[in-house]
Amino acid sequence: MTSVGLVGFFGWGNYGDELMCRVWQQALPWYSQVVHDLLDPPYFTENPGETDSKHDVIVIGGGDLIRPWETSPLYWNSAWLRKPCIVAGVGVALGERYENERVKSHLSRFLGSPSIQHISARDDNSANWLRSLVPEKEVKTTPDLAFALPINANAIRRQPTVGIVVRKDLSKDIIDATNNVILWATKEGLNLEFIIGSIGRDAQDDLKIVQKEWPESPFRMLNDIDHITDALGEYQLIASAKFHITIMAARMGVPTICLRTTNKILGLASQLELPQLAQPPLSPAPDINSLITRKYPTQKIKELESSAVNEIQNCVQSIYRTLEH
Image 1 (cartoon, one colour):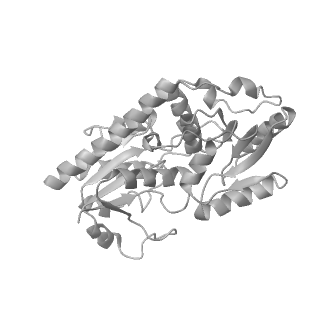
Image 2: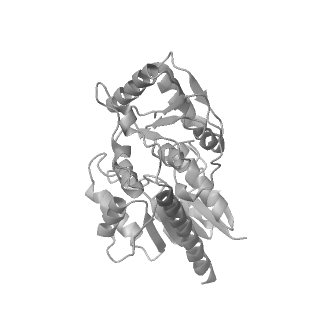
């Protein structure tokens, strides 16, 4: 039986990463399994060299798996190169910290290996950074692969309610933007609640942050990734500090504002042709109404969804060709 090993930030419960895992598990016509079995270093109860022997192909895919300042022993473990590898839809965490030349050298060797059958990145900046490391390889640009996941876009809107999603690694700008949204929602006479945008271990961390910073605010906790996705469609507005919450809300046509500006949000705003998406409500008296897009470019979203599905199909075909040889 053909087995595909999945490499990514899977199992901790972060919304976007669990979406990625779901994308692969639904799309691959073979048995697939997450390669690691521990959520703390060393991540494996067995030696990775023994782990990879269980799989015929390795797929490395997910969010910001490339951190230019450190080499993950999970994502970029040389043991994976013993098998054909697909690197798909990855992001590079550019601008968050410094760039380490030893890390770049390791990634250059890893991605330049003959074992790497396919490389794609989820935005132009990430793709260009990878191209500079492995100019001999083709690096494709693809929309974030969460655009490939089927969704239920028929949720019934609740009474005017704003859903707020923060993250466990809070920064001052996220706190300030969140407080501005709360003030605005109160002034507008809207209900609001925090959505815990994660499950499992990460959900407990996110919940602690909400209860510490906004102890009087109601919150909504769901225990399944699909339930979180479906719930997004119920809100009149989503204010989010999480990238994939923004993607999925946008796909459902829910007015969405971001609580922080990052390179990946800038990339998404460019792909959607919605520059206001990357403008968090940080001014003392924010005109949030001007940041809300009430009509999304439906055709553009359909194009991104189609491109993401095509990328998944390309990866599947690449694996087929690899297995034939």
